[in-house]
Image 1 (cartoon, rainbow, N blue to C red):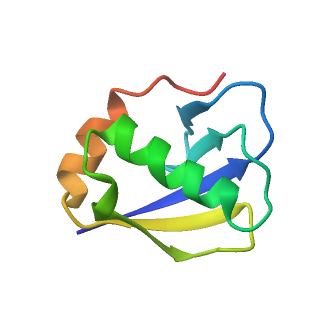
Image 2: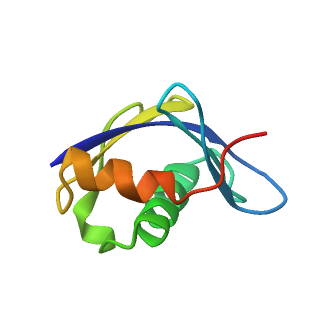
Length: 91
């Protein structure tokens, strides 16, 4: 089971996911930060980008914050690292 720190930006023009140098991800979603919509969009985007079932991606902290932590139960830390390296780097 792997843990992942994410910085979420809601109400973006397009959805994007970029790896940051400090080991976190920068995620932009089109949904607003109202009623958990941005968090749910982030969860779905993470599952798609990491090629894992949505049910294995769970929010563990930061429900009302831009800084969130997700747990991916179907990956270990090594495999998560390999999959993150396939993502584009932030500019």
